[in-house]
Amino acid sequence: MKLSCVKSVLLEGLNLVSRAVSARTTKPILECVLLFTRTDKGLTLCGNDTELTITTAMLEADIETPGMIALNAKLFTDIIRKMPGDYVTIEVDEKGVAEVTSGRAVMKIFGLPGEEFPMIPEHELEHKNGRYRIAASQLRDMIRQTIFSVSLDQSKAILTGELFDIQDGNLQIVSVDMHRISYRSYKFPQTTPEQRDHSAVIPARALHEISRIFSGDDETEVTFYFTENRVVFDTPEFTFVSRLLTGDFIRYDQIFNEDFNTLLTVDRLTLLNALERAILVAGENKQIPIKLSIGDDELTVNAQTADRGQAHDEIPCGTDGQDLVIYFNPRYIIDVLRVVEEEQVQIKFMGPKSAATIRGVKATNPEEATNLPDDQKYLIVPLRGPA
Image (cartoon, rainbow, N blue to C red; front, top):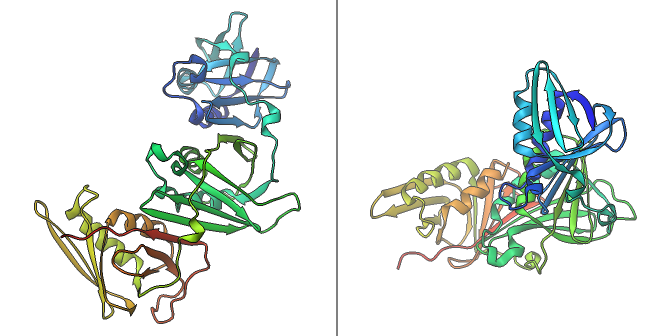
């Protein structure tokens, strides 16, 4: 195998596929990135830790001798990064030693046979329910606005991922950690006859990685589809494959309730700032709640600990219904307020022991505020107050 390519192009591809390279493994091949040439027109890179697989589109390269080689991802990336010239030449001999040349610098790295690399068979990547298209920025935002509610409890493995529930041309992304639920939906602008309703749970790690790849203003179109036990995200630059989680996800659609006994409409940033002050007193102890007192168009936020001090904030707001005193883990509300984009939020309460529902609202005037379309909502379970 022998090829030459632009250093920056190769380095960008290596940084991308290295996201799917195993950091802790007893199998040396899983620490590698695969370099292979299907034709004499370009180079393709692949990383695979058996859970995630990232494969670049064909990178422009001059291929003198086609072939494949698996090279330690970290070492090879560091070598390419440190090479002095703008172009690099890679030549692999019969013993699997890759010689990397750039300018006057020459380095050698021992490789493994490319045939040992765990590639996914093509027939296992055939879609079952049609292909769905979404802008990269839209997908990234939907993940960002829900991923924080994924459970960290490995004993409930199905909740360590997010549900992608496609119904009637709508994508609904849901995460649950038994203390809260995050929900985000998106209506596909176009559907095709081959698309069918489908539900699958994607591991949080995979969603974290793919959302980090996309920038906030990336309007690249992403095509995704599901196979028997995987999800595939296709873009012009790369293909991203993740295994799915198996099990029964919670019936989220039966939990959200539109009824309320107390309705609060409040400026999002004002409440966020008050809670961030309160958490300075509450500290890192998740069992120390903050107290919300609601009544007469005013919200009072209180936090107090014996060893750190106390915080008190009074916030003007719009209220409807009964007065209420309720306790929450402040971090759960802060997580929501940081991802809601509207200036105001509405919080619906049934009582001091019932979960509250949070949504952004359209208007800045509490008397004119109306719920946004059902595309972003959050449910948070309260804590027990002091005895």
